[in-house]
Length: 361
Image 1 (cartoon, rainbow, N blue to C red):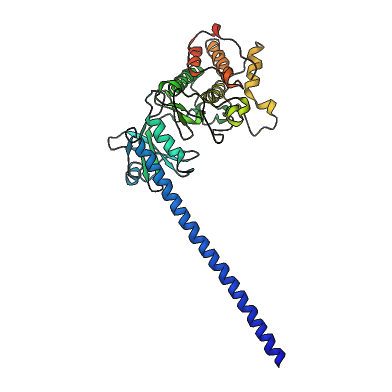
Image 2 (image 1 turned 180 degrees about the vertical axis):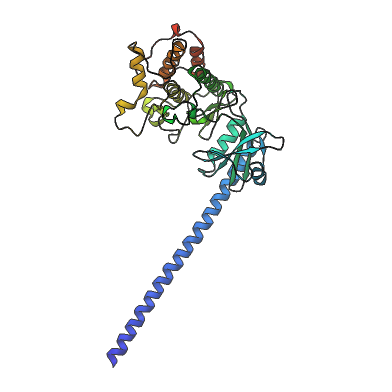
């Protein structure tokens, strides 16, 4: 009988221990959840306050500020989707005066909303025919939106890639040449024409928008870095950009310091894609030697071989060769061997007789 009583007491004691352990663990989880909730709330509030502070700092330069209710109204509750990017979705909207606009609703944010601040502050400092106009923005709690002028012809990418032939609308190599000159002028302005030097860091066909006359406008300044016109070297904590267009020095300082020449590299890769109607790097193909378009086109041009490019004829051959040579100069591995955007404009608008073949990239 005594043994039974002792056994029951032992079980009871063990049960109490289990209850205490589970209660303690449950209490710990509850405290952890409360801590994380408070941390998230304070972090979120801090991010919003930080964004507000940065916008107030540049208040005189900022475009019109909209309420979120106004953003919903102008987009008819986000009913007409135009596209989707890395940081949000773009919708078509209409202002009260009847003008069409493109509204980017940001769904992802890094740190204190760096890409949002970059967009508002950097574009607010620009005024150029080849830079997209930012008409307004919204910052209301966690809701952030950017209001741009509407570009009827969308982005450049849908006009150049051959693999998208079903949806691609050919516009001709001469028009692509005009677009390449316009983009070069826009970048020249960002690098030298502003009071603040702006390096875009994400030049690619997707970020080049075309108006009703196919005039190109550089857009999406979320990764841009601003600096003094007197300071050519930029400090960077981590690489930024899109694979296939990122300059080597952005990955490794062994290639040199990071500067506006990073945009020159991206521009060169894009120009070669515009000429060839294909992406310079195709991740779906295993053998790099088969897919690196710059090598293929360099060997064709240097060896005086026939260049198999859609739309090429005797009338536009000189223009195409000029674009190829310029593109190959732009993608030289070492930044010091690349031309500036001012030199690129001169090269594109000058005579092909004045151009020399660059080293093989």
